[in-house]
Length: 404
Image (cartoon, rainbow, N blue to C red; front, side, top):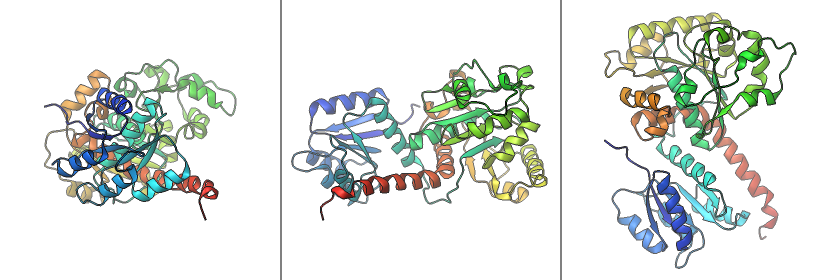
């Protein structure tokens, strides 16, 4: 069964601009409905049974400008939550204020690049698909994904979580593959490492230059930059706590978010990472051996003095069905899981074999939505605050231009 595509409505009175944007969005895999008349578009929107997932809207149009169009969309229960991006030739403060007051979610200049258009669209769609925006927000900038039991999807979750955060906010994220052995993150993203942290094992200086670490990053088209794992088991054994001490102060500042695939067994470097990360996502499958491994991991964390709120449980359904319910897991571990990822073995295997992250291949499945929701919970507090601060600064800087 083919994946359902996101549906975008474009309202733009210039036929040339309308054609260009429509062609780009179709090429990116979206279903597109386009109108060059806002009144006709509004009539269609009011009567179509399944509403579009996003609206791209021109500001200056005949019969009805973009601001009035937004007000009418926001005034209807069936359409009031549809994300709207305003397309404008002038990004001055007055336009922004009027657009924000009308209910626009974002602005995009008509001279913007196709890459920026794609990122803005993906970011708003990703946020729309997060089903529960009223959940408790968590502040975290470095997130270690870990389990004491192999085969529960630590690497898969790490890759797709990094990608989800990148898409949600249109930012670059850093994914650090710290698996002691042969890491899988590069394989899952079809990236081939050349240089890894093992080259720093004989580093004699007390610090390492940022440019050296950046040269090791491999950029993926999704917005994720991979810090790859060692290429061989022998190289992995060279990475020690001294290596972590060297790179940690820098690697956590390379991008707004750092996601670490911390693997599935304890070592000195892994424990150092887990201690320094803001949050540990402890991944487990809904089966007894996995629950026991999680219990043992949490026991070690407690002995090391980690704050209890630092470790968050994520249940990943790697089997079609389970008799071990979330309630039983919560009771056994005395901790309520933060998230549950639905089962989709077929899709996961297909993505792995193709070297394409699951969120790219299957963006609208319940599994992808659960990962996006988890990403939102882990990043919304910081990113929404940052967005609000930037908006206030923009408005404040232009306040001298306002009348009165």
